Image (cartoon, rainbow, N blue to C red; front, side):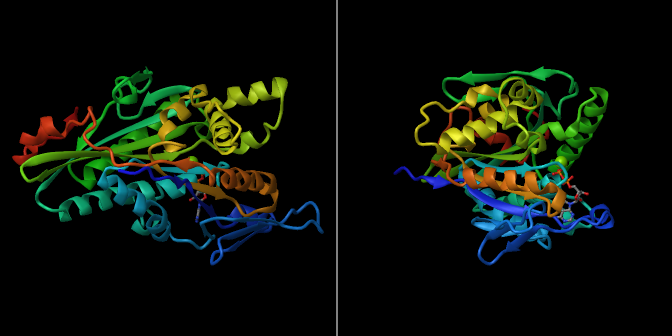
Length: 369
Ligand code: ADP
Ligand code: MG
């Protein structure tokens, strides 16, 4: 198969002004020209300053619907994952701009469901409609990264810190991370809810500021296709990432002590920015993936074997001007990252063969693998 590069796809989503902002007399400084993918931001502090303009593949204005955001960002990635590609969907942006709304949303009414729950139905619908000569094994895991510590949101003991390890054959993995085999969308929803509860309980117990944590919901789809009596295995991994709030990041154009402080606040988010800069700066030889756990876990999503979409969330209000501008600049840089996605064929860690008997006999039971 020939090498095929493709850039990280970057889209912008702007949430509406909320009631508090309206009550406080804040005004909208963001203009979204959805037809041409152009976002314009006016500086509320300097009346005659030329507005800043950015162009993206696609932008979603304050009226955008969860369903459309899904169809135009996540849908093609999920299709690719079912073919055996890796896919990543990131939500980036200041706290309160709609990252969790975009990734998880609300269950009720169903129109407000976000990307993660929508992937569940999509994956199982496609599996049901696939040819009968294919078998599937679907697994999920859910983790949180806070202050450079990894916690398993589906484990019985979420206070345990997990370690990143590297296997020469299969690459980076997290030791002891629980993975659950899933048979239907309802079971997946239960895992999402369970992890979400654990996250909230853990954050309170450990006195964490939840805007400073990253979450990663990972779905692995293994496929076994019998072609002329031969089995052909592909494995696609889907990373669904709700990043920590970026607001402190923009205040880190600092050096010395202030830089150190910023790095301590969120080394993973700082490093993500550094990795993006290094990837798009042709002069950089060294990409600092190893400087944080987030970038180590998502190394393949940035400059590697993954199809990646970054959703950069912004707020419309005047008092968020600096943050909004900083997010748009960050997103603008990320557009230039080149990935090299390929179908993962016969990976050494594929489990579907060992489970094939059970799958064929429909005896697959939910549980830890
Ligand atoms: P973040 O995860 O980035 O901190 P949230 O997703 O929690 O932000 O959103 C903050 C608030 O704004 C929530 O009450 C959410 O329901 C609301 N919100 C975010 N985006 C939208 C949107 N596009 N339309 C309507 N409400 C939104
Ligand atoms: Mg959030």
